Image 1 (cartoon, rainbow, N blue to C red):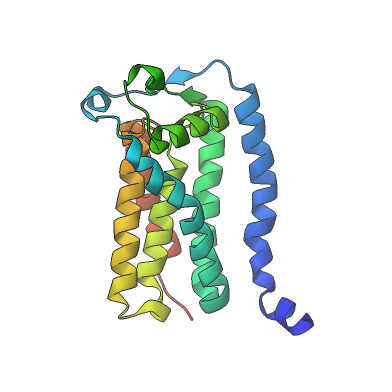
Image 2: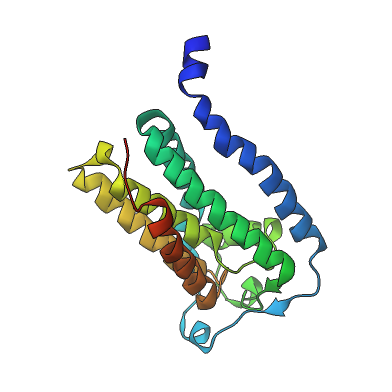
Length: 208
């Protein structure tokens, strides 16, 4: 057990980060009441589709499994992934603090005229997650970070099925954020911009 803990002690990096991150995010969620509305005219052309709750919820195991994979299979890649995730999420917290933001896009589910398990899951999501602190989208950003890490790591070289599945899931998660009206297209745009800025910083040179 001691050897195991010593070998994988780098796992504590992401665990230690999530403690202050979770506290900061919790305080934002509970205290942000006056915020700037994020909205684009393009949002009106994107239909609400409750079935996208499935890829939206798959984001949680997707990120967890990806981080665990890198902990055990690619230590250098793990540090790059953690650096990307932690930097982007910290930027998100800072933006949400100095520029409180939110949405008015969520539909009234009771007016849709239909009932199904997907809508039940969306209703549960609405109760658990406020429509504030949305820009840039962490769902989109973290998915992009995980996807880049999977495509870059030499431990998955030639694994086309895994990479293809990762890409498809990432695209579906990004789509789910706007199709569920959890995010504006603006939130998605800035998540892509943030990822584009961080890629050359953390993936400029690969060392094993």
